[in-house]
Image 1: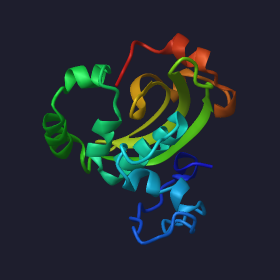
Image 2 (image 1 turned 180 degrees about the vertical axis):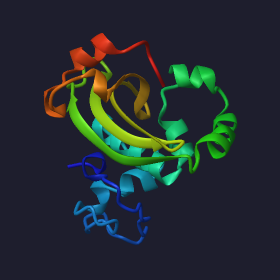
Image 3 (image 1 turned 135 degrees about the horizontal axis):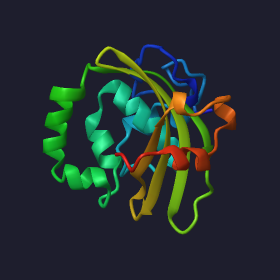
Amino acid sequence: MTFCETLTDRNNESCDMKTGRNEPCPCGSGLKYKKCCLLVSASLAEIELLPVQLVAARARAFADGDFAFIYDSYHCNSPFRRHFPARDEYLNYARNDLQGRYRIHSCRILCDDAPVAGEARVLFFLDLEYGGERHQTLELSRFLQTAGGWRYHSGHKVNREQLSGPLEEITMAEVEERAEGICF
């Protein structure tokens, strides 16, 4: 179980860096520190995250307002990086326009592809509040492997109400079919 699977309206307490890698994480997730908050407390250059772990780490970073981690987790050729080529420009935007305006209620991994030729996909459900409005979306994210590890490239988002049935039965193909272009 990852952070995304367990994040449901709890306070995001910071983890003590003195916690041993194999000790229980102080955030209360029940996971070992190395499988939970250590993933977001270390820089991307220090750890190797699998795509599903990167989804969890990005959700945690958004919840904690760690926009530097978010920026660094994007692939250098992503649509996001074309829009924000300068890290400082994005950090300024995030501080002014994003921080404190949204709250992640839950993030849940639904399925993922086995990586093939340096590319992988992860389908997840995100329930968040932005600007006082509740949004529930499914995102099919694309990840590319670099010399520095996996990086988020892009994603297709679909509003939850566009897909019927239990979350566990929604497929990547359904999200691709209903998505309206690529988002970052």
